[in-house]
Image (tube, rainbow, N blue to C red; front, top):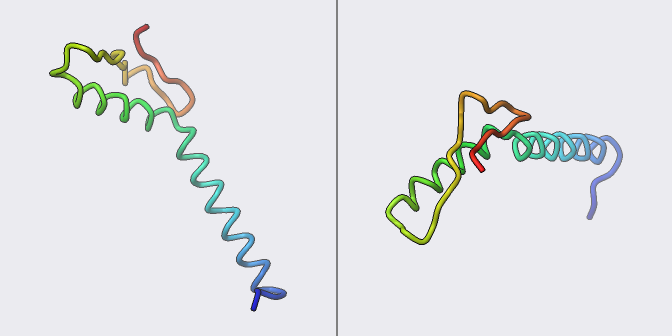
Length: 68
């Protein structure tokens, strides 16, 4: 049995809001900077893996700054 009427509209609005929040989180480069920093820490002892240095003071929600 499916949702009907107002329940369906409420569900769709809640679902759309959840998707928007997740997309905003995924597109926030501060999260990417934190993930890249964690990766570098995890791989620090390996000679065969390098990770670019992150410059957190230059990172924002829309800008990820790292060495090339």
